[in-house]
Length: 181
Image (cartoon, rainbow, N blue to C red; front, side):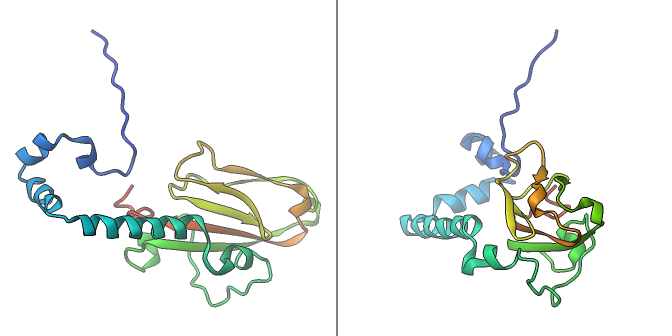
């Protein structure tokens, strides 16, 4: 007999969010955590709400005009660590990191590319990110909101020689690590 199953979870959420309180109390693996949540005070919830608001403000609003400075071709990133891509954060040797990460790459294009539209495919990053080409924001993607991560680069931005690709990415909830995937 054929059946249909509807999966309505949001990737990256803890199983506890999708499990009844009764089932959580029945398991020795989740019982203590649930009891700890039950002891939180109103003040702790308020502080968590304030912290969460600040957290999302940092994600959605670049600080200190970083989005106007770092993507620019003239920005000096010579002191930045070099990383090989594609890689997860595990390969960077920095341990668990949660926050904003900037990635930049200089791409040298032959004369024949100048003034022609390009398509830039980022693969499938899970995190929220903004993509810049030669200092101009091309897109702002919010957590897997787009099924495709290919972007048209307008012809007026494409120059012969050196072009700069910059990505501002939010690395959160263990994302960017193999364990999170």
